[in-house]
Structure formats: C-alpha cells, structure tokens
Image (cartoon, rainbow over all chains, first blue to last red; front, side):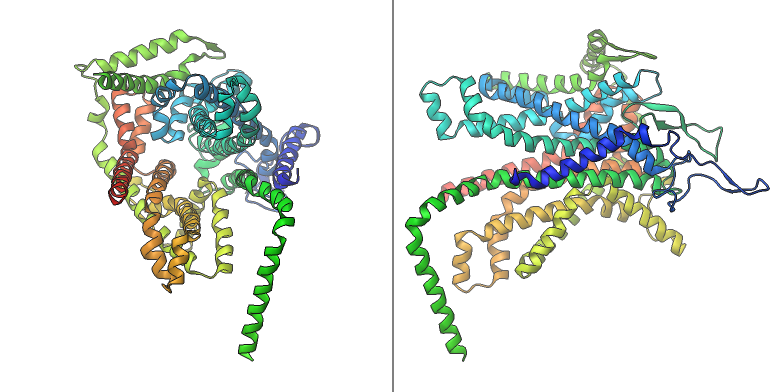
Length: 343
Length: 291
C-alpha cells in the first residue's frame, strides 16, 4: 500500500469533502445564511446581494443572498457522486465490452470504431450538449432522481466508445506477449487467460482508466454547467434578478451542484465574479487531487518493471559485487588524480 | 469488389452511428412530470432523419445554410484555430529549447511548474483572462483589448491567447518528455563525445528525430484547441462558427446541415491526420530504401 500513498491521501480528502457535504443537513443552516437587503434604521437600503467576499461570507454570496461557501459544501455531494459513479460505470461497461470485443469478436472492432467515429472528431462537449438538450434544455417537473439517472446514462455513454477502444488496444497488446501466447498454445481457454493472466494487469490499468475517466467527467460536467445544462434540472424560481424583476428568469440549479453554480452565476460574471470563481476553484481543487492520483498510478504502472528489477538485483548483487567495487575504486582514483593536478 | 462493399458498409455504419447517437436522448421521453422510456419515439426520429438525408430534392435540404452566414463565421473560427495553432507550436518549440538548454536543476524546477498546469481546468483560465481584461479596462478606462464579439466586432488577440494558453503547456510538456527520452539515446552521447555542442545536437539531430512524434501529438493539440474555441466563443459571445452550430442544434435544424457543419468542424483534424499519415508513409519508404 505504500506505493499508493498519494492516491490514498487524495481519496481520503475527497471522501471527507463528500461526507461533510452529505451531513450538511445535520449541522448547516437550511437557508445558507440567507442575507437580503441591508437596511439602516430609517429603512434606507445600504446593500443588496450579491455581496462580495468578506469575513462573514468567505466566498461572497450568490445573487439570491446565499452564502457561496455553504452552497459549495452542500452541492459537493452531487458533483462528486455523479462524477464518481459515471467513471465507475464507464470503466465497467467499457472494460467488459472491450474485453469481449478483443477476445471473442475481433472482427467487430473495426465496425465498432466506424460506428462511433463521431466521437473521434467532434469535441465531446458538443455531443454532450446535443444529447442533454432534450432532457434538461427547458423547465420540467420530472422527479430529480430520475432526471439525474438519465443524465448519468448520457454521461456514461459519452465515455463508452473511448474506454472500449482503450481496453481493446490494451488487451490486444497483452495478447501478443509470450506468456499469454504460450498458455494459449498449451490449451488454456480464453476465460482462463482472462482470469489468471489478464486480470492482474487489467486491475492496475482499470484504476488508471477510472481516474482518467473521472477527470474527463469532471471537465464535461463543468462545461455543461456553462451551457446551462445542470445536473438535476433547472429551478423555476431562478436566480432573482433584482435589477429586472419582469425579465426572463435566469434558471438556477435545483441541486446546487457545482457546475450548476457556475452556470447560474455565469451571466453576472462582470458584476459578481466571485459567484463563478468559487465553484470553478472547487473544481480546480478536485481536479488537482485526482490528477495527483493519476500521476502516481501512472508512475506505478511504468515503474512496475523497475520495482521488480530492484528485487532481482538484490538477488544478483552477491554475484556482481566485485564489479561494483572495481567501479568505485576507479572513481576514487580519478578524483585523486584531478586533485593532484589542481594542487 | 470486396473493398467497395466494405467501404459502403463502413459509410452506412458511420452515418447511422451519427444518427443513432444524436437521437439517443429521445429514448427517454420527457413528459411534463415523468420520464417514459420508449424506443418507438427514438425510432420515429431516426426514420425522419434518414428520410431527410435521402431526400435530395427536398427544398429544406441545407435550409440553414441559406439563412446563416456560414462562410464568414467559419472563416473567423478557422483563423482563430490557425492562429492559436501557430502560436502554440512556435512558443512551444521556443520554450522547449529554453528548458532543454537550461541546467539540470533549473530544468527540474521548470518541469514541476509545467506539470502543474496539467491540472488547471480550461474554464478557470478562460475566466481569469476575462477577469483581467475587465479589470484592466476598469483601471485604465481604455479598451485596450476587445473582449466580447458584440456589434459585429471580431476580436483576435484575447481569444487566441486564451485558447492557446493550456494547449501550449500540453505541447511543451510533451516536447520536454520526448526530448528527454531522445537525449538518452546512444547517438546523442556519441555526438557529445565527438565534441558537438548541445545546442547543435538539439536543433539539428534531436528535433528532426522527434518530428513524427510531434505530428502525432499535434492532433491532440488541435483537438484541445477546438474544444477550447468552442467554449471561448460561447463565453465571450464571439460570432463564430460554433455559434451557428448552436443555432442549428437548438432550433432542431435539418440533419443534412448539421452533418455538414460537423464535418467542417472535423476538417482540421482530418487534414492533420492526412498529413501525418503521408509523412509517416514517406519516412517508412525512405527507411526501407536506405536499407
């Protein structure tokens, strides 16, 4: 487990954020420290939301007068949970289907690639928008959780082709190795090869794939927020426009999930940049943590050979010790020579 | 004959894949307060799209092209793309040379700094640039950089800088990684032993050898730039190609114009893939000839 120290720490931080967000109804104020107009004794209005960041509101308030930090805390669970489950489902679905394609139906691979060709040439945010538009493009009263389920399916589908193709490529590469070739020659069944020989590799690669998919899911959720497709749907009440009460409502999020917070503050960016920067920084924090985990997993996969080499070199060291000493001797001699010359 | 048949099957698969993908959300029929899963609606929409594509005489064919100024907007977007790509390649090469010629200690520190930008989300960069432009405007009162594309304005500077910021670091990271790996090769130590200067080895030998790799990486760069342009055009309200695309999607335009628009969007990627393919083939040919 020492090999995955950073990964564990990162996962622990994310878990703490998630738990804090889940327990919010127990300890947090239900109205998010709602603060309306500030009036003096005579009823003159001194200030109105959105309030800029201050000591009482670290990240300022939203246009509805809600504390941004509390909103972020409350909404984190939706963002994290959806991103996490999307990544897990993508890896599971893509991995299993990819294994099936590579082992049992290799002739279908090129057709599969052709069928999902669009995903290679069109930015995924564009496809995501096209897919999301009929579902959360406008106000509706569908129960939040069935809406989220539909969105989850779409998010999983978005990453499906790329995970399948990655798995197929990886499996094909592994199938070329001599130990798998020889076990096929000895009459091992495909299932046996999967269980005994592919699985150990696929476990670490699966972890890597999962983290990569987590990153891409977080990105796509964030972008969807900008375009107004919030996870969990739009809130009719909207962000109150104090300036134009009669104007069209800027939809707010129902769930206070982070991308939705970006999306609902986005139109006021010049006026209240903190309503956008706070959730974007939240995303930045999560993405930085996940990226750190990804780096470590990648290093571990690449360094796996090195680690084995160390083990081997310990065993051989008894034999090669003599050589090492000779090398050291030469080095010292060289240094001596240099010193003498310089004196 | 067999190849022709295969080609036809592939074409049909590609187009049907596109149509299936785009009609997929209709499986979830969103009612007023329920979601009903029905494959029938999906099939209906699919059929309409197929008929629309096949019916060449329909006056609605390419209807949207007659309304939208596609030529003008796509020219603007492609200028942004080309500009950003040039900036990214030029600055990326320059920075890579600077990093590779610096001493080892400085290089390691620079690498950490460059790796940091890997985790920065593109939205943060875009918003920061927007924020600073606005702050600059408020502080000086002079509109130094045009930010928004309202009233037919076509800003170039800020969008290109914003779009190429993250791809630049991505390419730089790749170049440094590739060059560091190249440095370990035998021919480099041989050249060093012969007393050829590091700069000369870098420019004349190593850069030439990583060129095919660079070209493969350029596809990713263009891909990232395209996605960034899409976001920037929406956020800065620029009157670009993606704006038209948005209109076609939202007003449920005809499938034919949508497909052509998507093809146009994919054109830079296709071009770079074609050039890369040709180059790799030529290189292989040369190697075989040399042997």
